[in-house]
Image 1: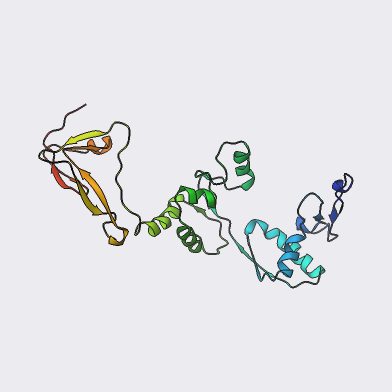
Image 2: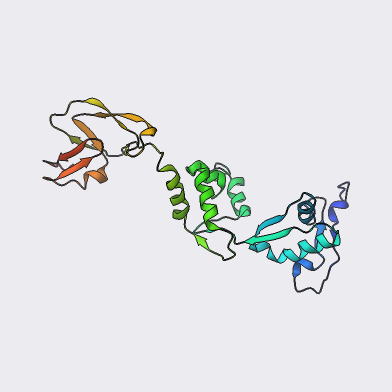
Length: 243
């Protein structure tokens, strides 16, 4: 087994504990294979490396007795296991085994695909490290199983970026609607990137007699009423031409 021969790869070492134990993890578990990580590795390394608290989720609770059995059998220092509930997100696959299938099949860009519920994935999608930290801290270390909404994690991120994120305006590429403004000359205007934080800086906005807006916004316009255009002011809508 140490040499990794064909015969050695067919064998394993098991700890002789108690085959009649109601805990299946104590029924002579396999502790060594020459092709896989060992079960013995976790408690041994945690003890000799000075780990005081082993943080792990509740699905490993049945292995706690096995963990401490090895610690006592080897006469090692006993770390403390701190359990907490696993994070579950609505309508989301979090199993690494299942996510690996998507990566191996080439259905995603990789583990940092912005559609993936991984740390690298959400960071690429726009999550900030600070927002992620605040979300994790807010969950605490409860053992109660809960299912979180994605809206909550993005709400934490918004609190981080909203005070410092510069504001820009964009129009959808498909079917923009022109607005004709009488008496308006084409010229640049300097305005703040953030209405409440001057430290973010300024930006240049071009105004003129012909302005493009989204069709969804155009459908809300009403003849004879004023409409506020950001960084411009109020414009009186005199005539709407259907297209």
